[in-house]
Image (cartoon, rainbow, N blue to C red; front, side, top):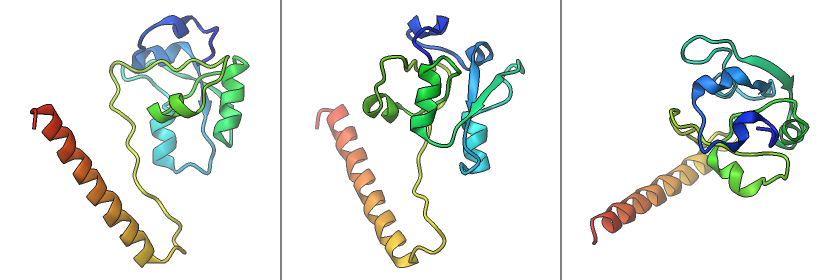
Length: 138
């Protein structure tokens, strides 16, 4: 959200707080389920969320946010890689984490996609085992 927004000084925000911001509208190239997740028209209690300007790329969204034109819902990785002086990242305290999944063009060779997905799944399983082991002191 813009660094000058009243919610920017908070440690966390709720999904209901979206009613107090203009929410930028994601590009039409984002699939409908992605737009619905990132730019809902209503809060969970039914309060309307004011739509802000549309954008086509993350850099454009960050520029609009920095100029005070609205806010947008992003994943935690954005906070690490896209620091901006006029943009503040405030986590939600009542929202599920955004989940990411591999996506590919239909023209991509299927064997290459399946090979990549297998490596990604195997790596995730190893990381999960390592985390569980570390949590139990093993």
